[in-house]
Amino acid sequence: MQHPFKHLAATVLLLSLPCICNAQEQPKFKFSPSGRILIDGALYASPQKESFPDGVAIPEVRLGGKVSYGKWKAAIEMCYAYSKIGLRDMWIEYDFNPGNSVRIGNFIHQYGLQSTSSSRKATMEQPMASAPFTPGLQLGAMYVHYDRNFYAAASAHVESSALQQAVNAPLFNQQGYSLLTRLVYRNPRADAPIWHVGISGGFGTPQRRVEDNVDIHDGFTVSANFPTKVVQLKAIGTTVSDSKNLFKFTPELLFSYGRMAFESQYFYQRINRRKGLHAYTSQSGYATLRGLILGNGYSYSSSTAQLDTPKPGSLELVVDYNYTSLTDHKAAIFGGRSNSFSATLNYYLNPYITARLNYSYAHVFGQASPETMSFNGVQARLMLIF
Image 1 (cartoon, rainbow, N blue to C red):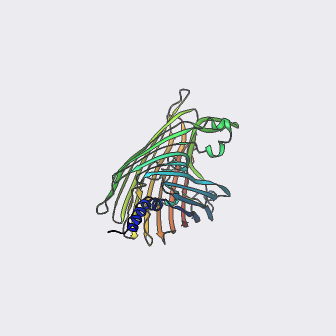
Image 2 (image 1 turned 120 degrees about the vertical axis):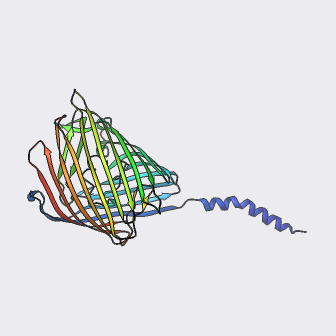
Image 3 (image 1 turned 135 degrees about the vertical axis):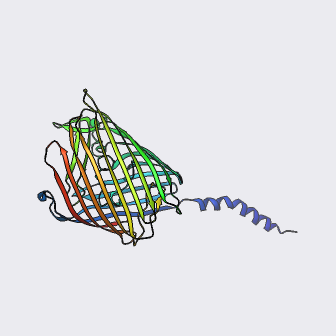
């Protein structure tokens, strides 16, 4: 005969199992600090030496934090750059499952291979071909899906001035917006060459333009700086007035095998205009060859559709060529053209510190003025990211 206390103990154990399971399934709150420091030095040998004085700068300091709780994530970062303080990353994300998520806030939206923080790029600076067309930090929402073979992102964001002007009701009511998407098909097998092909597309409405101290929402500004942060100087660019809307697209290609990798993009953008004015088109392209002098080879990130940062102890050589045209004779808009080349050595000392040595050359021509301008410089950077 079984003891009655055994039945009682079994009953209590069975009743307590759901409570034990729920206790085990409770998500944990996690917090981790985040930040970065960039320290740059540069020596220039440009013909226009007066525009490029040698020097040392701290172009960016960021400090913030990231939190996670179950399927929820969030981040916020403050930034000090060029004597100004402001918000950078500021978002909330919900992960439906490991391959589907939605993010809302201020962040970099997906549009091609360069849709990542500047400090995560393999080149010293963002390619000049990408700068006029790839959005930076923007206030909006984005949905991302990825699996073994596919990556897809769709997002909507308002214009960059939204963070500064939204408190002004008339300007808030006139905000321009953009829609973006990125689609990638890939073969990320570890035992075979890594490759992916993709295409991104975008649509936008006119954004804020100031004329005679009056706010007019009828323009788009496209521009690119010379590839250096010690000196902040615009290389090419223009503002297109009397605009109706903007269409753009960019195909992308990535190939990697062992210690070698190749990345390339072509950009096309068309701005339709009012008052019978001719539409304005601009285009560009770049090709980047990457090689690991020290290191075991490249790996691929399925969640971002990009190559991972090489492992600590790796020494990488990155060679990059760009061509950009912001001049359209039919539209009588002369934003300028540029050819640029760069070679960068990246040494990944540990998971947090990277040292870079770079040579860059850029030649600018095709603007309304017949004068040309050349950039020629050697730069070094010590970068801390955590």
